Image (cartoon, rainbow, N blue to C red):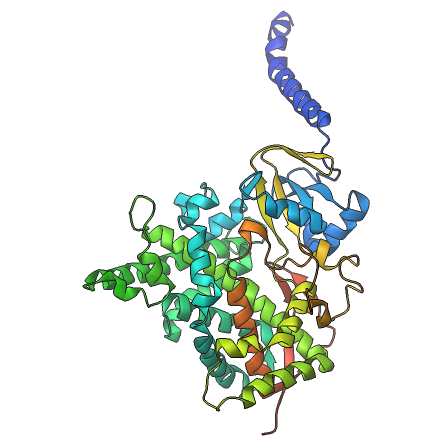
Length: 479
């Protein structure tokens, strides 16, 4: 008993230190006017609620319960502040690189990147200056892509759509967008070579946002394995291309080629070429952006064209006027794209109602105050498209499909944000616009669409996903 009394203080010391630390931390939090919200369940946070409700209802319910400006939650194991509405969008966009920096969940980085980069911040991962992405994806540079997009869209419809009376739009749009990215970024045209990338890449996109349990048979385990195969194949392609360029007498002979060749000629601030791993990271980032979100955007547009005959008829009228002004073998040009004003308004209204991306994460680099609340350093933030896209103050009758919202000056700033905004606005915005419009042109020129499942449910994975892949009946136009 006496020995126990001597040992008691030693046994209680760790518990006391933990309680003091806990109370100090709790007291520190209590002194701060943190946003209202819920931490959810221990370890799990509110991940289950987010998955079950979907991002739109999850955000809407908490805006009503806690605050229409900003609320706190716990997602992906992180303390997180969700910024809402146009003002929340503006604040995050305008404070990029001042109060916040880009952030990806660790589970996503583990699936996509080499192990050497999973602990690095995104700036270190990229290695390329953001200006390079803007240069290669700005309208002037993209004009040369339009004929290639048009030619591949024609080939795709001939092989995948024309032989069938019913097609599933989502898987076919994914095939088209990935084939196009491989052709434009890597000059890959052989179906077998593309398949070596597309099959494992599908595993990555299907599993990188799932529950991050890396056990055999899980979607996340599939994403990890798929990511490894994608990186191995890209490294093989990059090494072969570098040898080709080195064999050329003048390296600038590669400048007129694809995106990969341009990356291989880029030097960093110290005059060194980028490593194969750094180039692979950048290619993977571009493939993710051009594949998942663009195919989702194409699918959403096809959904509304099949669902709303009066919208389809207006798009058909505009596109056929362009088609009749050209010879049957003439490919689309930049001037043709500029004539697709109503079609682009239809696409933008589709992006408003069914945005491919639900928002984006950031990490706070310093403590700051927003809307009267303190956002501590190290917290993660998230801006959300639905809090502005579905807000009746910005868009009257927000659930109604109305392309005229985008006529004239269009929506108020920071209310329509499918591509983000500020310094981190998606550099692929113009690429996506061209791809969607070229695909719309080719589909409506050849087919009238009718949904096979009128009220098909939409679920949220990495992007909005029709549960049956959006099957549509094809009605070829009479020539």
